[in-house]
Amino acid sequence: MTKKRSLEEIHLLWMMLDIEFFKAVPASYSEVADQVIDWLLWRERLRNGLEKTPQDQQRSDTRTIAALRSMDSDDPKLLVLEKVFSRLAKGRGGDAMRLLQTAINNKDAELSARQTKIAQATRPTRRHPLTTMVDPIVKDSPNIKVNDLFIELRKISKSSVLAPCAYDFSKEMFIPTDSKFPSVPKSSLSDYLYRAKRRK
Image (tube, rainbow, N blue to C red; front, side, top):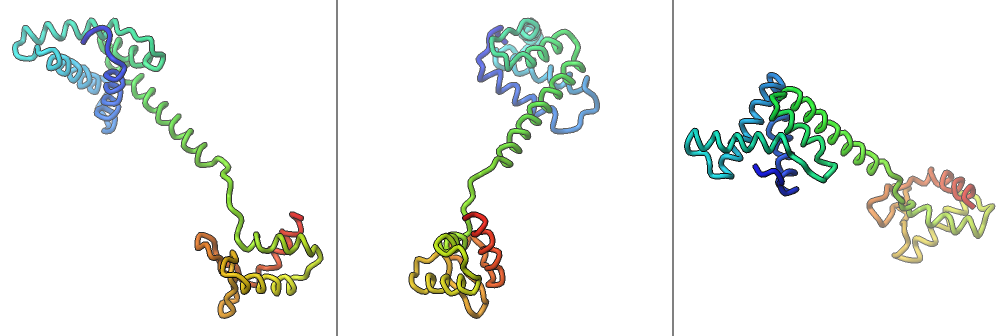
């Protein structure tokens, strides 16, 4: 392990630590730390081609531990990871894993909060097609009664196949041409009239 690693490598390592060592419940933080340090040492032995003999392994491990102790990045996002590696190299494995898990949990919580905020954000919604038919009629005839409104709506729906809603006498419902919207029973027309007058 060289003192300076690419950001891609370091981020990959962070992701691997997250995936490999904290998805299953560990027996203890120290045991997880032992697994992590063994994994790091073997990774560097293989990367440096120093895995064949005990002497080669020792050479690689000495360099790896020294690099972990002195890891130095200009990226503020890696400050926690630098501290984790430093603690691992200094024999404080349990503390290192507690810090790492806290950082991972915080990262997950921040992501969850962002996703919740996005999901709860106000999105522009389309008005029901029947509303788009009722509003212009009420605007032109503010004192219109519900039965007269029904007659006007029937005229519009019969006069054009492009009308937003058609009326089905057998169901006594206004059926939107856009199936994303629910059908509206005739009995609810008074509610649409009331809301249209409020918007006027």
